[in-house]
Image (cartoon, rainbow, N blue to C red; front, top):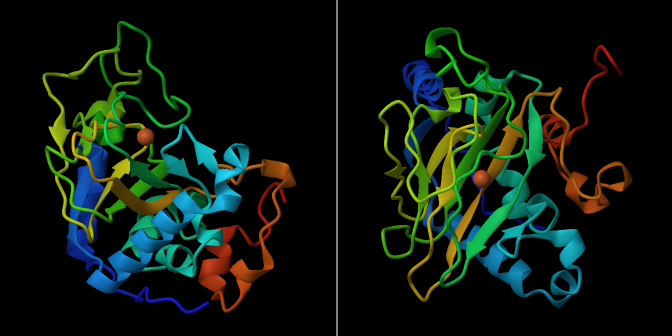
Length: 268
Ligand SMILES: [Fe+2]
């Protein structure tokens, strides 16, 4: 399967340090324009095809979450598979999560008209705090274990909706209260407006939501969820998952490791 995804270029040490500091203090960072137009089109086309694929539509259990999320995009189209090793994403992931990090998941999101909303942290609350403790200390706070990179594949704005985050809330040690606009230590939600091809990254513990799509066009996002090696990969149906043979075809050693073909470690 041919791919249009380029190798890209890693951030230099100064920019990498800026992003790592932002992730520690704010829990997120904007990465600016990254993808070329043909890359955006290939990724967007894959999401649209998968969302309309009769085989996928017949298997909601296996390939959908909440009607907006399409799982394991790397096995559906090589553009998504190769996005995993596209720079600056992969080098940034290794700088934050270690040289043995891997892909925890790769879900694409497609929000139809009226879909979106709901503040949350992704999956487990990793470092809960007692009620009397307001925050972790940013200077020596918990490490980032799971890092989400999103690449909008359609323009995101107030009308189409976009990802919103509460800066610093990855240090809160709690989940956001129900409501439209949670705040943490005086920080209100901000909107990560982004054009197709731009990218941003966040610690999966930050309070965030995909705002409601108030347009009539779908809002589409691709990306990669990277995690530290010891955080289990989430490839449904988990222990019964079999990586399809075509995913390995032409995959570099680095890509194979990111897909989970690891060296032996302390537990095996
Ligand atoms: Fe989320």
